[in-house]
Image (cartoon, rainbow, N blue to C red; front, side, top):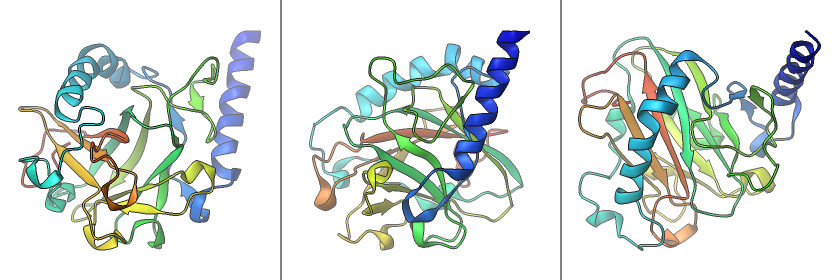
Length: 239
């Protein structure tokens, strides 16, 4: 009982941190980040889905390959695939990152990146741990680094809403440059997000390049996947 009480206190503190920590653009956080495998769906994802998706990402978006997104057939992210045709519960899983920066990932439904009135953070600190930097709580604090399979529930997305995901470069370390799935918001005019859905999968994998002017062009500086409560037609949200 003492251990359970201590765990509950840690969870409560993590939830409190999610509401009070300093954040880029003063954005709110959608919900606390939940630890990989911490509910039934996440356990299934961790055991049966994640290994295959990580293998797919390693093959499709390898590190430092300098690929030109215009040559990545089928990976240019179609914003129509981020539009819901029904009210849907959506979840975002963290897959990994191939960069040392502490970026931040957010979402809006109005296409203006972090400048949108409804913009909010999903992962305040998109980076992976070294040593003992990951705590033991079932919730991550905004300063905690992530491990593959950590997730955030976005709640119910209303029918007709379109999700605009954006990455704030070094957002967890006061960075301000951001890149969006909405190309018109990118200051360098370049594509910074790619996405694809493995055949027959209810998941949409999204990868970001976090440097202006294309950086190393590997689009694996942040990798996530979005999942909805049911497999939807690919003309809608494939996630």
